[in-house]
Image 1 (cartoon, rainbow, N blue to C red):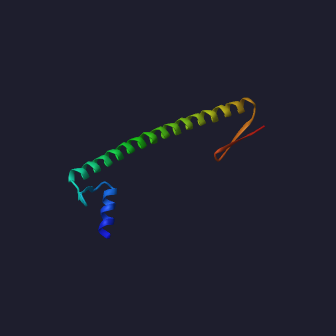
Image 2 (tube, rainbow, N blue to C red):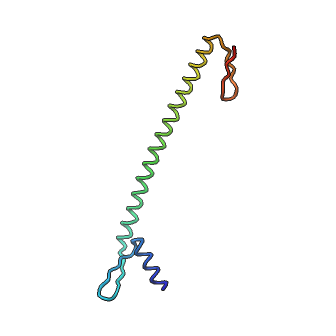
Image 3 (spheres, one colour):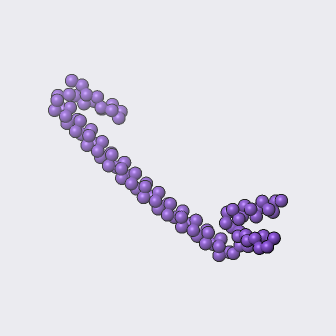
Length: 99
């Protein structure tokens, strides 16, 4: 019974082929099939890596853009506060404006 389970597992994973001829089942595997299967998996993984690297680059670009926009916003806020006669007191990551 263990052999039957092993063969079932191998055929489910496309590592072994099976053909029913008459009343018997014939199992076989070619090394070229396993090489092709492995090459396809590797190719798929390389494509996934490339896609993820592009996503990382996009996220890093978005982060840099957001940082620049934030710095610009802080600068503009300071300029407006100074123009309104407020005192700017930096505290940690926040700025407080006092009259």
